[in-house]
Image (cartoon, rainbow, N blue to C red):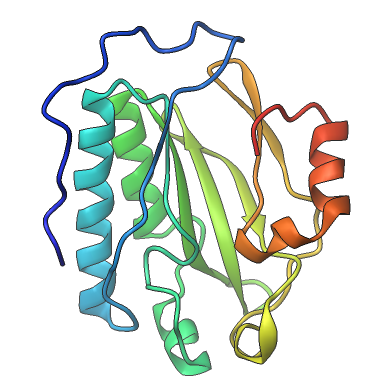
Length: 190
């Protein structure tokens, strides 16, 4: 993995007051894919990035699709690396969120133990608790359809810093009814 570079000066402005907005930190970068060692490295990177975002007084830190495992997975890798919503990825994010006082958007490969299905999911962790777990409803291409089961619920709207935030998963921004639904339910940031 490449080292993370940060600006030499932190922002001087205060983050938005409750209800007026959210200071967002976004991470996009290369990460290892498809092995238990990749998952460990990606979770370590999540912690590293969140710590940096906290120095910038971010109120929400978001990561890319399938961040914990890496994106390009075979069906066997997806099943082998999937974690339940109460697994180590989300539990670690809950502790980190509580410690840093920041919301985290944690995309992960989810195992639904009860149904025995694997999902391309996003956990939104706030104040140390998983407050939303969204399963991608519109899977992209044959590879995603081979690896994941589509979710069936509308994407959630959650208040972060008392500001309504909606969740979508990557390709889903191509479907206007999804973000129209979020906006119609009050989302001001998607």
